[in-house]
Length: 491
Ligand code: AMP
Image (cartoon, rainbow, N blue to C red; front, side, top):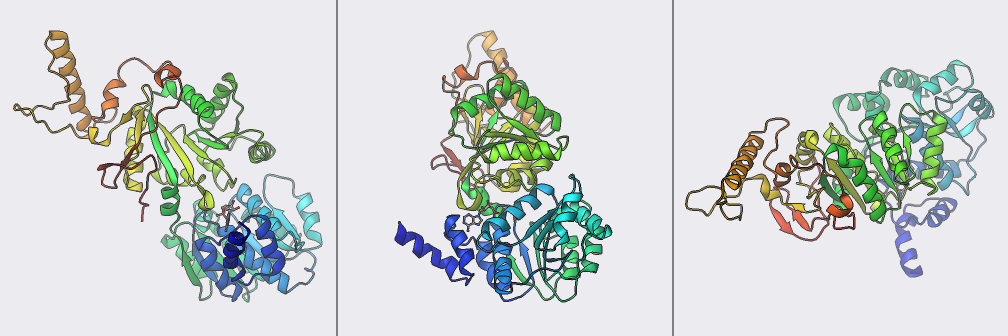
């Protein structure tokens, strides 16, 4: 084991980071650099600007924090009053807090001075913290400008600028703030620019601030999706809460994030779980900063193992060891699905993503499957039975009359014939793709029947909604290869 550890660590040692940093990495049990770290760190150490295309979850924080700490270790000097030597801009308070924690963790043996400048909390403490200057300042753009305007801070001593999640900054309307900040920085500086995507606006912003940058990229969606075991449970809306409670009780869950589409939905799920004796906390935009921090802290230290979140609130949440992502509601933006499942399977870990899909969400599921280019294994929430992908196409018949043969004998009585005709009509309506109609899935016909009432019984008493052992090829062909699915990421 020791031998293995020292062998693996050479990969970090080869990067030439200062000893106090590699010591912290050993303590954190980081053994090998992630791809974004292996690509980025040498460029930053060489003093180059970098543009990195990488998502949260790929290890990008350490990719910039480690070489920056190395720069500080090798150029130790006291920062001037009301200045910072390194400025990290991030779009959200949560992400800023996490970046700060990373600097503290990796820099613990260097005793770097760090400050956080985020909105939503009084400015007084931040002003006092900055009065002696700091080595690393992590900030959201609005609060940073407030501090500059209050003369609590000047930016003319910044040696290294990091812009994290540039695409989100643009989405959130920070472009003008960023331009103003960049105009205040010394022209002679090193700039590290990270973005999950690189659309034209993001490229333009990069051009504004970068000088002959080295380009590095990782394709996180692919690697994330490959390591996440994904499945869908088709369930009526009214059965979702009970199904969730059963999954939380029966699956080997260390930490689960449950996504809802709305803030009220998140609060409702917390109440419903409470009625089942399951403790959970919600984080969303209606919660105060203090409430959000308390909920995150309880989640991090294991006091609660279930966090209910909306997409916006979950941005930038970085908690290690999330074993399950549960989509209580499917996102209507398919990219959000990829972001959500990326909360688990971080830095090489494996994770499970379970998505609940009611009748109205089937179109969203189709969009998601198109984006990730795979058909997700599905089970019927009421029976726990797998739903085979091939059921999407009415099976080709071997019958001489060419009618679909579902393996059942032709009904002899009138009631049976009526039922069969109704089933076929429902199937045909679904195949025509009308919204709100079933699309030919076996389970969808069933879902017009009795509502889901007792998942304990439906799931054979185990409440396990049923793992499909059927794997699916990218083109939808089914192939038996165990429960792990290998996704092909969107390009
Ligand atoms: P990030 O993409 O920076 O949000 O990092 C995702 C998670 O991966 C963080 O929680 C880190 O603690 C963890 N991590 C980053 N780099 C490594 C590494 N080389 N080995 C193991 N875990 C890592």
